[in-house]
Image 1 (tube, rainbow, N blue to C red):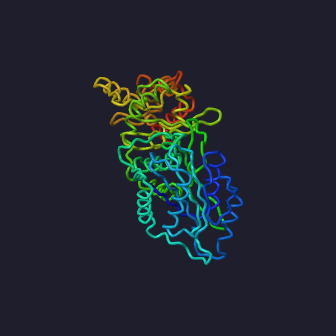
Image 2 (image 1 turned 30 degrees about the horizontal axis):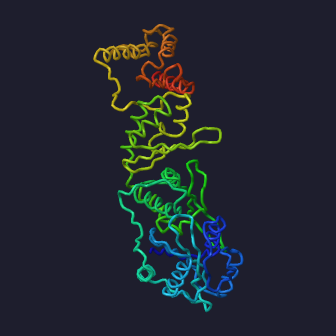
Length: 455
């Protein structure tokens, strides 16, 4: 039998959690101690809460005033309600909680029936029942009870490196599944933001939200986890991180954000994404190509269907990266334009294809052309004077500047190397008026620099 003990301050939250199970006819109250019980198997949450408050001292230094315990026999064990009740009372007695107010609930929401106990741990004189060595004491007690009631030994499931992460099964123990998913994702993957964290959790139907606020004048900052279906709809009550374990807390997750910064190498992922993009014709082809490389692409959409978020999950390096971390050509905005045919493929250069290099003839011709341009713009042979000194005549015809400007205007993109499918600077379907205007302005600035300032 496995016992799980949570110590906290939210007594009302624990009562609501168990009360909802009963309201959905997935459990019932078996017995109580010092708390009103009408014998119907149901619970009046408000009245139960008031009963607990009557046993609370007026003054206590304890912040965590309650305990929430679950006792989980082996799945093959079948106990009657009377046996479950007797088991729970004996467990509480041996744990030193026999005189404390508590409620015993039986949960039947999964095949493995089990019991939950909600109890106070603060006595009326303000002292607290010690939780020292709770884990070891509890384990010894459960072993004694297994022998006494002829139960099969049961151990807590251990997380191993090769254990697969599965989607949440609505018919299973949702809390345990969420806890296991959060633990395994945290152990195996590297991420740097809550958005990246949610991207990997979402693959397994789990969502995480930050909670910030004030309670009784004190600020709190925590995390809440949700189990969802394949469409992202919540299928169970949310779980506070404290109910799952320290590994799920905000402190633990933010610590992982910081440690990941020094461990993440984006280059292996970037190369594979770049290669997939170079060989894909559109959205479906791109996503399929990425999956073939063991990379998931998570896209987030606005209400009008525009992509506002893109996250790449590389299961090879176990790294989660927002598109902008890889480069702006892999960002949500670039993908949205590409997928909607507003731009050509947003990839500057295909992997494995080097930029074309000019041959010797081309270099020679280019050199000669450059020399003639410089000569026409006032560069004189050695020993010659300026145009003004020789009577105002120059070696360049008066209309040379106009013809040169016209020539540059017609060949403005000729010096930009192009690759098939990547004609980002070509007039046509991929033509961008803003880029052309910027390029022309740069050309004019270069001309002015070569001419020098007017006197």
